[in-house]
Length: 152
Image 1 (cartoon, helix red, strand yellow):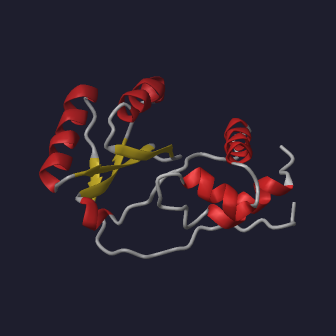
Image 2 (cartoon, helix red, strand yellow):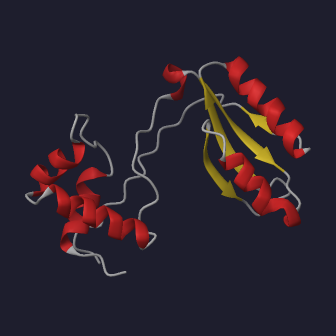
Image 3 (spheres, rainbow, N blue to C red):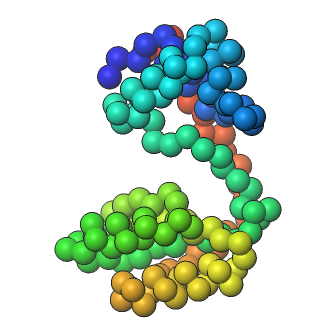
């Protein structure tokens, strides 16, 4: 996909710091000097092209409850169905495939550790696979912004 000027400006400006207000897309449009519909159309084009995976907040998990990184060793023949099942839980995000014995990795977030533990037990019961529970021991902050400017 050829990335147009509005897409470049939108990506550069809003990878971080999306407006926290009742009408965030309108606020984005004002900052970019375009219409709200142009912003929404641009985001839709980026999503359909596979250039955009999600729009949403990233929460400081320790303030929002409890979370853990989880890995499952899923037989290849069951990978699609297990991934689909894992994705059905609203507490699950960042589900991805790895080339390893533990090949399905995801994050579970819940209101407290008891909720996370109950979901881990449910996943084990429903899949027959034992989750590898990897709670974070220390946080390391990395800015994953990728400014593109006029480079493309």
